[in-house]
Amino acid sequence: MISDAIDNDQVEILLNDVLESHGYDFLEYSHASIKRRISRLYALDNFVSFAEFRYTVRTDKQYFKRFLEEITVNVTEMFRDPSFYKALRNDVLPVLGTYPFIRIWVAGCSTGEEAYSLAIVLKELNLLNKSLIYATDINPSVLEKAKKGMFPLNYLKQYSENYLRSGGTKDFSTYYTANYSLAKFDESLNSKMIFSTHNLVSDHSFNEFQLILCRNVLIYFDKDLQHKVFNLFDGSIEKLGYLALGSKESLEFWPKAKEYKRVQMEKIWRKL
Amino acid sequence: MAETVISNSCSALIIGGSAGSLDVLLEIFPALRNDISFPIILVVHRKASNESLLTDLLQSRTKLQVNEAEEKEFLTSGKVFIAPADYHLLVEEDQSISLDYSEKVNYSRPSIDVTFQSAAEIFKEKLVCILLSGSNADGVEGLKIVNNLGGKVVIQDPNTAIMPYMPQQAVINVRPHVILDGHDMADYINNLNG
Image 1 (cartoon, helix red, strand yellow):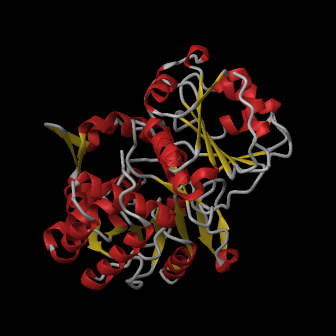
Image 2: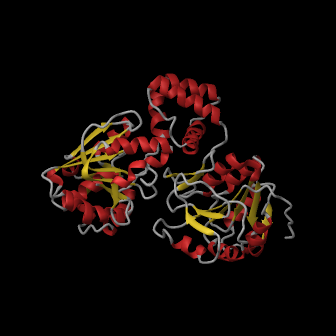
Image 3: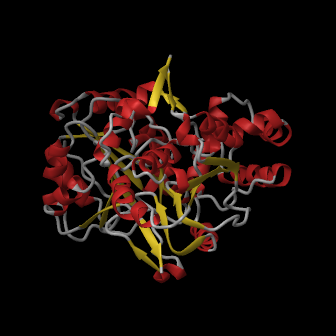
């Protein structure tokens, strides 16, 4: 368990260092979460003093890679919230299917589980051929994992259950081959994916999309930053395109929310 | 246990429970006074799919407003905030709620430890934490921090708990503490009112 070794001032010092030395801005992240992540890493890596920790984070490029991977949350799963994927399958993607070409952005894709889930649904709707999924994350090392499309085999039972509950009708195991402790997903799925780093805090819009998926990313941002990111998404969604958020996230307090219409009970909004 | 509380300094109450805690909660909630002067946060281990079941169950037994916590929502007195299934719940400096989908702690998300610790850092000696029945040791480390920061630790008497392991671990590892029978919890909470 985490000791209370890092205080609020130290968090601030560290995050300012990170911005100055590495160009990553975490100052508008939710404080409680980021403090917990930092304290956890500090304890995990057995630093003897805050000064040593600070120096290492500031100067050691290799360690900073670890820092970045550990203080951002990279927990994800396939077909998380099956009812959400059911709504995508039944209500959203068929509408996009009427377009000649479908561009989707999975923002904050982490190790790729959502992008692969989406590709499976697109494939079953015969839409994958004309789709392109842009999967981005702040963190280059998780993108390397995402590109490989290999997920721990021991999670697959859960993923398969999620898939069936989301309205999937195939045998889920046809999508991967088991390879020791990993499940390697079919390459036809990631042939339609483009992986790239993108920082929602500092990078701009790079295309127009009919669907943006950004689930369980915004919970780590403070309100102002959430609104900035909504503006970024707003500038990246076509008219009548969709924005999908995590089960506890909402557009509700964003000033432009009235220009979006909620799709049923899910955390999916359509731009009017 | 004749514990009289002469205290008007409770800023927040957190109740943590796991297996076997629902019975106690169902006993506590109907007996709570309607003018509770602090927010109550509930962290209960449960399956990810039973979303609103717990909320509905408790709401039907109290006049206090019971809601599943929304992210960035402010803690307000007299309301009950339930940590959503599959998210950790943390408390910010401005007493708003942050949700977090990071790794499970003690095989649990929400983890009682996470919320106890986070709230302890904000409310310090004005925090009261209750740990109920359960079969893992989640909550124990959090209670230590609550103690260190001057908050009050209340543990369900393991002899009255359906699953005694969790409260037992707390009794062994966290000092000082108050031990209460499940039946006496509601009175204790009502007396915390400022």
